[in-house]
Amino acid sequence: MTDDLFKGLKVIDCASWIAGPAAATILSDFGADVIKIEPPGAGDPWRASTPVPGKTTDYWWQLTSRNKRSLAIDLKHPEGLAVLYRLIASTDVFITNFPLPVRERLKIAAADLQAINPRLIYGSMTAYGEVGAESARTGFDATAYWARSGLMDMVRASADTEPARSTPGLGDQPTATALYAAIVTALYRRERTGQGGIAQTSLLQNGLWAGGCFVQNRLFGEHVVPRPPRTQAPNALANHYRCRDGRWFLMALHNELRQLASFLEAIDARHLSDDPRFATNLARRENAVALTAILDDVFAKRDLADWRPILEGAGVTFGAVFSVNEAADDEQSREIGALVPFADGKGLTVSSPFHIDGATKIAPGRAPAVGQHSEMVLREAGYSADEIAQLKGLGILG
Image (cartoon, rainbow, N blue to C red; front, side):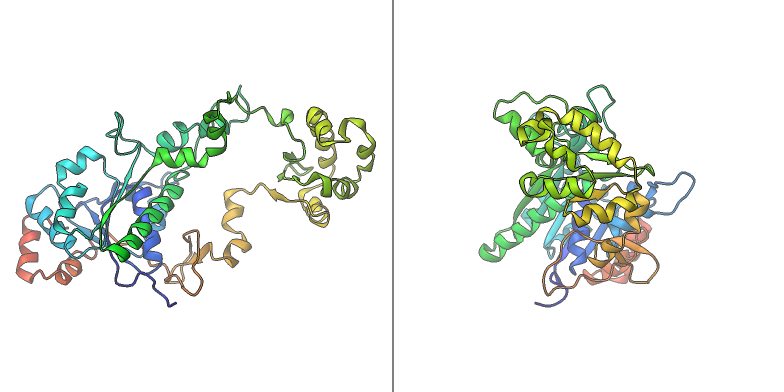
């Protein structure tokens, strides 16, 4: 195997916001040539999003648009659409998350483009799927992935608290990975059969997949109730606890038969082994509220830094609750290639979440300015200088 697995693979990213473009970003990480289509002027509206009020730094744009070349073209104009059609003839993958009615109106639906290039893989991302009464509805990951799927309801602290808000991209990034998987699967089929096709996924379907454990309960007829508050969790040994310094950690001691004795000894609570309330798995479940209260008192006596070596020494699986600031500074994340430097050496970015043995991802390049590569892309497609000047004169080319 060599570097640049997708070298020579031509991809058009005609999507906006996160989920669609991020799928193209993963392809670019492995060497695909990704052309970002965006309207002249302000470009993709995602460019204007910033997590810091008062700052114009395009943090989020850099994450999902790295390695791409920008072609700013007005697809509403017949000659602008003609440019896209000309590019499609030699394109391997086309990605969009425009609403279905918009695709029909712009004449970039799957049928339009596959008529030009039958080998084309049409990567399609929607909010609620491509059939059914709601297929034309618009949606973001917060509405379709997070709220509609039941996740927003199930992760609230208790039934009495407000539903939990999602963070930007919480559903978009995993949905992008699913779209990438669908595209690569379709490419595999094309290698075997020569057949192009539609590779599609939706925010709703990915939300249901992410919350699949509880959804499956319901599909088998169970009535799924809101999760109880932490102090009433059904398993005190798979719960989160607060240390003396205010830091939290999540413990997951699931192999109780093998681990319980060493755990209780490590936290200086051997006496609990003799307590009939906690003598068996069933008893511990029936008395989980009492055991949680006891462990609350135990863990409140030391700082997280003190508990780390104690729990690790006892072989307990646990994880400290990191802030985003800590997660971004995590050395382990750097070691595994989850956080990688930009090619120019200025700062880091979040890499796509998997690796292929023997294949090295390309060093992430900075996201392009609006239309930065318009002329280059058109020259590669065979446009003459006069034709490019004409498109500029008509205001079609940015």
